[in-house]
Image (cartoon, rainbow, N blue to C red):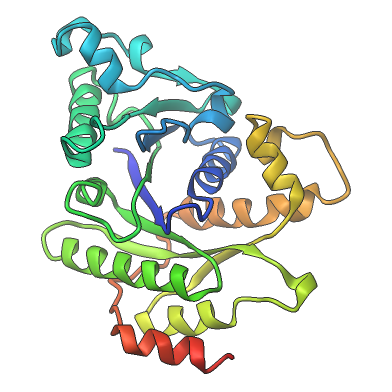
Length: 275
């Protein structure tokens, strides 16, 4: 039975880069991993496979949506450390629903007998306010992970995500494993003060703190995970948080909770208190 993760966060926060590096860390610790990108850009798996692979929707269109005509090789690419990548794709702009795309992808995997063949399935999901469609991965997930930075917009999005997780937990098994603080820049006096306070108030924790580092940005554009980058003086620092997350997830019983979202005005209080 696969352990299912759903990774969310504010748009442009670094979800796909973080997701790919979490997948890499999990794989290098012995887990068989499938990463599912849920974004019309279909670039979630780019750091793993080094290319923009065909989406599930594109593959289905080629066979007039006859599921039985597709094989795993039509929708899955294997990349770094044996990680399998799948891009769900998305509906045409202005029409359709992301939830349908996610559902079609899961249905295909189940029909192919693959869904339970992985140790970990990671959904990398578009959307920060989380409409009904893009909240669909929470229906399947054991744990949600929120990617955030130490600013108001990111914390506001994280709080909305906590609302979605809380609502889904009533009918489904999903819980929040924690918040990953991304782009933490200690060189300018920045930190995670607001994120720490927010996490405490909603009843979760910071899973890890990913540094703001040029090497991580370069790895993304190179189509590589951080683990595949050439060794350098700062590589170990950049890898540390991803390994921490993988260890927490693979521990067998990671610390998790049903979050208790706060009001919008309380978010302003958190931010205002650190001005």
